[in-house]
Image 1 (cartoon, rainbow, N blue to C red):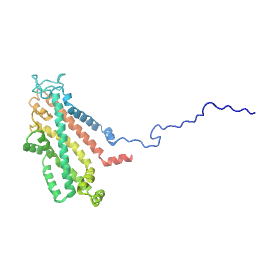
Image 2: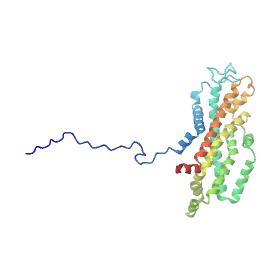
Image 3: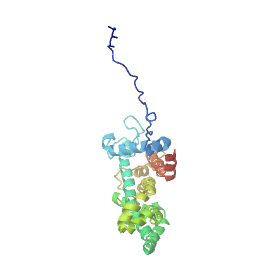
Amino acid sequence: MKNRQPRASAAVQYPAQAVPRSREEAGLPRRRSPRWVKVLRRDKKALFGLLVLLGMTASAIFAPWIAPYDPRAQEFEMLLPPSAAHPLGTDDLGRDLLSRILYGARISLFVGVVTVGLAMIVGVFLGLLAGYYGGWLDSLIMRYIDLQWAFPNFIIAVYLVAIFGTGLENVIVAVSLAFLDDFARIARAMVLSLREEEYVLSARSLGASDLRIMGKHILPNALAPVIVQATVSVSYAILAEAGLSFLGLGVKPTTPTWGLILSDARTFISRAWWLGVFPGLAIMLTVLSINFLGDALRDLFDVREYREETKR
């Protein structure tokens, strides 16, 4: 009998298949980062502005827990320079300057956002009506916008505050009315370029109402420049509120705002430099950060740049 070969005890090992280590090796497309992330990576100023603005917003929201003192509490030791007890010094009434700046950020940011929001709603609505219907309605709305355009926004705000009176609510209304003309002109220009597009004509031929066409088809495609204008207008609104408070036409004198702090510092600017420097730096950093973000939003909504990125 022939000798049989002994059966191998170990299992036969087959060569392992190479596992792809990346999406490129697997033949899958590379994951792309969101476009806003690319804009922030490319634009360091916008990233700086975003971080500063987030810090300002957080300090304004949590001011009651962050502020070391009551912003209205007075002490006998007045005009103290910056120290460990008072990091930014005190004013002429012994009030802690850091606490007043933190609480002032709440008023300034609130006024800036709310006034621009109201101005954007009213201005975009007027621009939609003027651009879509045209005719006598367009002439009536735009003649008013041209009349308001002839005067500086701050002068209009001062005039309206003189009519309505001082106070936070009146300041918001006055600044909102002063800034609505910018949004109306931008919205009207966008509507004039969009109302003859094929999708608008198709919606009109299908029997869609004017309100549906304006709200669903025209407005979403016209929001990009409006959002950019809103971002830039927030900085102007903050400056307008600070200017009105500086002149004594803003909020009540007991309310801590950046403009009122600067107004109180005029008399003591040669004796206490910190009274004007630190609130001025707060206004400058906030406005500068918002302008940096506005430039980034303009790049983000740029259609030509988006097409170039998709081709790469």
